[in-house]
Image 1 (cartoon, rainbow, N blue to C red):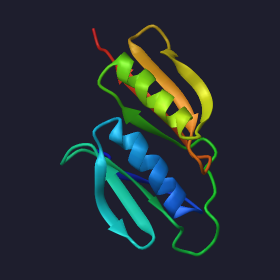
Image 2 (cartoon, one colour):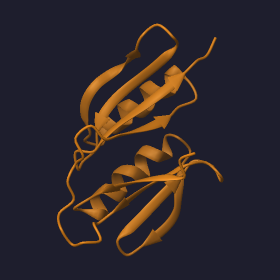
Image 3 (cartoon, rainbow, N blue to C red):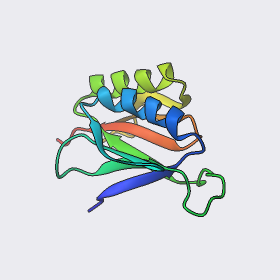
Image 4 (cartoon, rainbow, N blue to C red):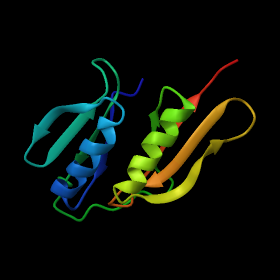
Length: 125
């Protein structure tokens, strides 16, 4: 259902470096790039994530309660991607671990602009 998610940034170059390295951990790469917008995808046909300088020229701000969830392929990948985000300067918002008792495993962090993301693995059954 989701085609892509866009997050605002006030420093496109710094944010692009963060996401280039973070998404490299997931096998992702840039698929669209313009003067004020860059987007990544892990595989063709899968949802993507973009960063942009706001169109209206005002500073980018963080949405309270807004979060982007990045799907991993295993619990080990959750840990690896979360660790990479922290290494790149992200702020911890909840270390990787089980959430509830139904197979959902996730770690939470904020990117360099303060946007909240999580990386998760959901094992059904």
